[in-house]
Length: 107
Image 1 (cartoon, one colour):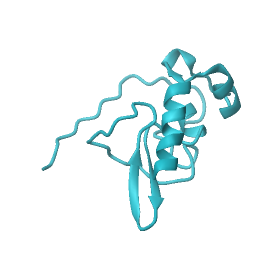
Image 2 (cartoon, helix red, strand yellow):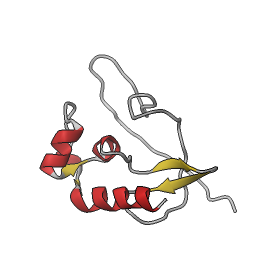
Image 3 (cartoon, helix red, strand yellow):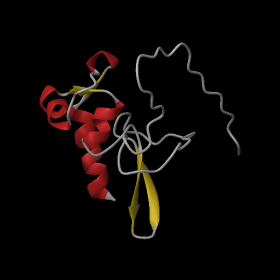
Image 4 (cartoon, one colour):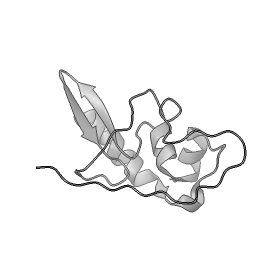
């Protein structure tokens, strides 16, 4: 678990998050060299905004972007990377007009 956290610490300290840094063709190598990125770039550097690592017999949650434990995560799918489980997938021109998510904490 310490090794995974060390990777998260490194990515968190090396990549400056900002939506203005997003571009469709950005590779992990470019994100690393530019030290900037968005969630997808954190993912390609071995950690999405958050991810689960299966260590031993338990899944542990890590979040290199914020690098602090958080609650309220709602997985939309499981896959090898963002291409396996995109939040949306479209072909051709499109415009996102609105995107809202409502959740309630369940104790």
